[in-house]
Image 1: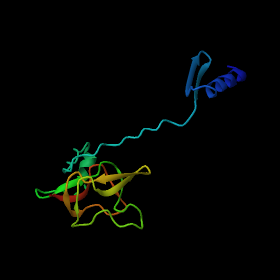
Image 2: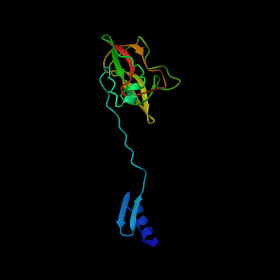
Image 3: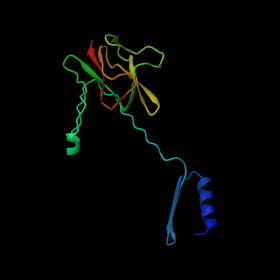
Image 4: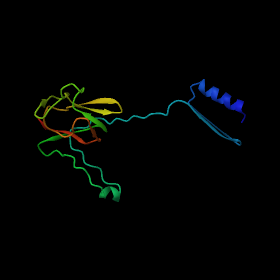
Length: 155
């Protein structure tokens, strides 16, 4: 393929809505892409405030690795799990007061904390009226999907 033909193809792609062009013939293969790579964002829906069981190990290497103990709710307390991977924050801003503290009674829909994921701050709300028994994850600490953020007592 001649250079002028290649320039014409590039011009065609940049002047239209085409984001990807592929051409293959006996002379070779040409692939032209433009624009940023597609970005997929996946957010899990909030789950009910129940303890989450750890997934089964997938290999012998994982079985041998020590697993950090995640506080599990007993019969008296419910766990409030993180609905996503991110960083937990207990204050709406660095100079503000915390959303809740141990001993507070919160109503359904009241914010408990924020979980920041990919520069988006997601408010985690109480799903039912409850009393905060324990704050499991500290402020500005990483959290995994399903990890317990709070232990609460239903009221």
